[in-house]
Image (cartoon, rainbow, N blue to C red):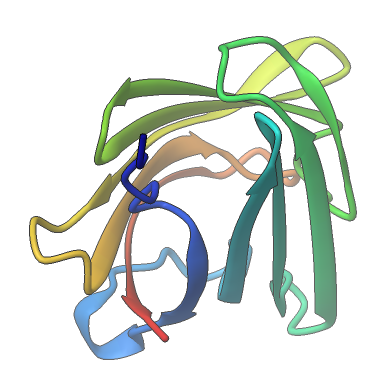
Length: 136
């Protein structure tokens, strides 16, 4: 039996021209989704609100449960829920309080993904980012 590859998996690079990112919020420029035996790993590199480099790592399952995230100034846990083959929802929390919610949708052709995030920055600023990534 052959299973279709998960369209979320792979390496994604920020398409800044197509994105709308609120100034002063985290900007992930390179994101990698990988998985083995149902366990997922998400790593990302980018810049924080002060233009300093950041590296985030999250491991867990796309089951809606909170798993620790390292390197994110805005959260210490994150959850992902698989809605369908091309869509995930995500919730980030800091000290148990929701800081960011969002949706991650891979295009029908699998060549891009759009991440819509709503939340509050570590400095208390509300944001609504629409971030587009191209598959590498």
